Length: 293
Ligand code: ADP
Ligand code: MG
Image 1 (cartoon, rainbow, N blue to C red):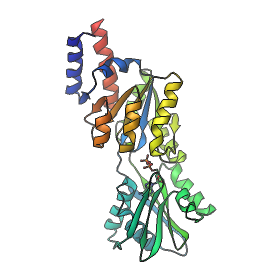
Image 2 (cartoon, helix red, strand yellow; image 1 turned 90 degrees about the horizontal axis):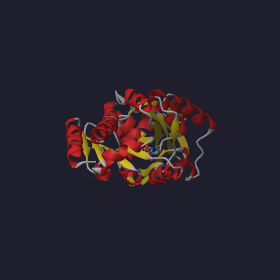
Image 3 (cartoon, rainbow, N blue to C red; image 1 turned 90 degrees about the vertical axis):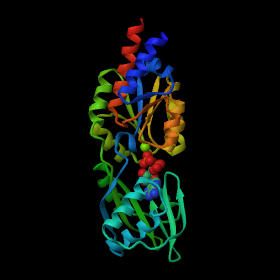
């Protein structure tokens, strides 16, 4: 690679909202065969909203929303933000919670009027000796097949309801995935979300390979695993928990609208934050290095 050609390449990138932080990445990009994409905030907008609320017979819509929003007030997770926003929209008064605790990749808990309330996955409830029950699991399953994420709410040592949120897919995700496939890349979705929701979203954008239920600190291991199979891997992500995986991948591509930590870990930063820019970056790499030869 001649320096001049590289400069032309990176200049063209900048014009297209592709920031090259690591010059070598442009050249390496041509060799990539697998593109691992985070789900939330990368393929989807990362701004879910509440779509469904199911209350058990011994509870009510009002109680489920009141308790869940009180606990989630302490959370910075997009699911928590969606639940609090929904409560605000419904003009639901949100009681004060104390002793807030977030369990990574599982959910949140806090005390409300001295009573413990949990919001999260079945495994979180189980770890507090609360059984979600077959019926609720079945209801959650239906919601998950609609590409929604369902969380369970527990109070009085019982599961009292389910809240589902949906995160809209970015306008260009489907087209970008299809373009990536047509230039020989294999897209893989990675997410902490459950398998069913992940598969439903993947299907909507044309991704066949899904790695779901990944704990935040395990994304790196999944990238390593692919590399051990001889694959050349680019990782696209936006979140704090994507940062180590961005570093581990042969090329880290950060969504520019994402967290600072992710941006700092990226070899390439997509300023506009859409997936079409990934396609453009690959094309830029091909064009730049064709010129040099
Ligand atoms: P991702 O960011 O890929 O969705 P996370 O590891 O942040 O993955 O979360 C995994 C799962 O843990 C969520 O899908 C949800 O079931 C549960 N969870 C995490 N944080 C919360 C929260 N604040 N409220 C409810 N559930 C949560
Ligand atoms: Mg994300």
